[in-house]
Length: 637
Image (cartoon, rainbow, N blue to C red; front, side, top):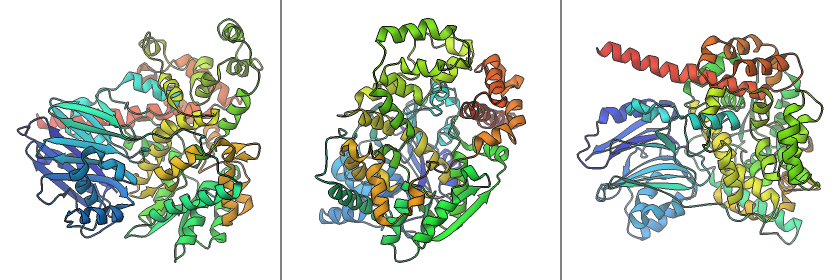
């Protein structure tokens, strides 16, 4: 696991400075505290920070081919690298390391950009081909590892983190208002946008080629059509599921360092731990955090699972200083990020890092098997008889605006009046709160008159998804948007902040292809959500109490904290003159939101958190960068 960065000029006289590449790497020491490697030659510079996991002694990067004309820096793990190495050696390639990184450079020699099709794992890498003056960037199929890039002044900049690019090109720090509007609506900035107008994310399943001063981005993988395969029986489905998931877990146990598992005590993480226990000769190390607030303390369930499978269990019950933690995290998050579960993910990562360097996680099960409550609600509503389209439009445009706030059924009727696609997209966005409270300033909103709606990309994705059933359409949407933009971003950033590698077996692309094709009755129906996955967990011995309980997943007692410990902090932050003067928030709307919440009339704590994290990002990341750059300029003069 590493952080990678670099600059490649369109010509070999671009004058890349090795010190600048070093500065880019210095911004990501947390991603790779063990080692730094640089390559600078002929208008190209590659750099990396390494967290040593495989081939501890010989895996130094950048890695090169036999005649040192092709160089690679790599972040991630290639789980089938041993099989690939054997094939490449038969074809005459000579290896000088035992690392998974080296297979990439030799595959590129044989296949060029098509080398990505051979790789099974999580990855973001850069290959520089000296002979052709070509840079190839690639990101894994589901977006487990991040990769950003920017084109400026005949150069292509790239980095695992935006900070690395800004270290080399601070003039690229202009914010992208359209992307920030997307953040307000969905709580993260979807690929390929970033918070900065000149910096992009390479989308999952894509490669980028920079050659002859031209950039070409191409998709190399997509999910198959949903719902096309139905095993002949439940037993056959269970056997296939167990085979594919066991294989995915086994591959992710490859490491030359200690590894463990994040255990929330829910279906997904418990299933992963059960399979790890069956494959490991030694007790699995498991990690869980809990809170003293009983409604949000999953520790007893995790403890129950740990006892069942004889793990070496580590548990921490927290009463955290939330203000101090969010101040700290918002200073390292490069974009506003509104998922409050960054806190427990960070805490449990810090706990795990005391004992191991690698953990397996249960993320991905909800997107693969229909685990979110909104899926059930969506399917139930979609199957009900609806008003004619004209009646729905009349309610939304004529009736809804005239009904007083808090009128019983006002918002539910609005949702019911929408076509099913719009209803689902609204369920994952801030749109209802913006309608109710007018949270964003008119000046900010009016700047986008005539431009794309912030949710248009979601509508397009919903249409693109190939599915024979309605569940498949929304699973495709979430796998392409929410999963890489929120879930995997959270896991990558928080685990790497603790210098911990997180592996995700349920997002093995072979497993995901099988799960996507699986017909919907095995995922969700009259028998419950994630039906076949729960059946597998039962077969493996996961305690029933852990499987049949309300879904939490490293949740926080955030509503309680907001109304008590965080109340003054929230009020001071969101109603501060400096906050309002930025021009993003409508003060009257924000005040109304806060009043309704603190008086107990609504439970809109997630909307408040989203606004809070945006303002903290402004203060602790953007402003601190500008202050630092200003200080550096003053010292230089």
